[in-house]
Length: 163
Image (cartoon, rainbow, N blue to C red; front, side, top):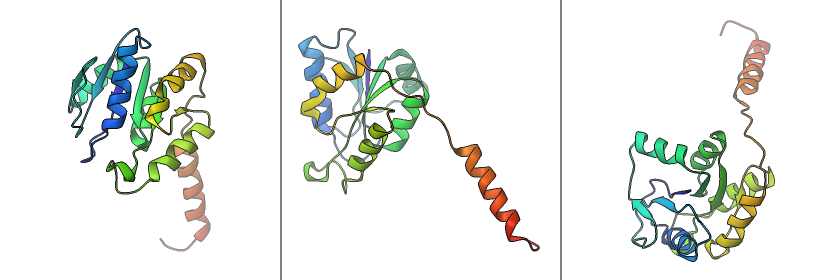
């Protein structure tokens, strides 16, 4: 099962939703898909969908899926990776009216280079990215939070004085 999430941006991401809809129509996604479509104007024909999900419904969809296809937002990517899902991330692009700039392309590239996700820089390449994701094992997410807090505390302590 594929779970598609485009986040809660005020911008549409029709290119991604159309690409997943076509993937499902082709029969490649045998278990089907569910899409959280946000501000998209495209209405999927081959998968169930809702514009927005509350936390419980989102959690249920995430728990039920094997693969998450998402936009290139860090929160969506990290959340899915932490849940142990295979993640295909597609960056929103300013030239298609999907965001205000192209920062998601760099985010997707970086997570791909780290071996955490399957980057898909263009939705037209989704069938190939999906096949790679199914055949590949990805690294698990390792949080730096504890190390960062330790380093910060040591730095503050090194400053001395009455702070």
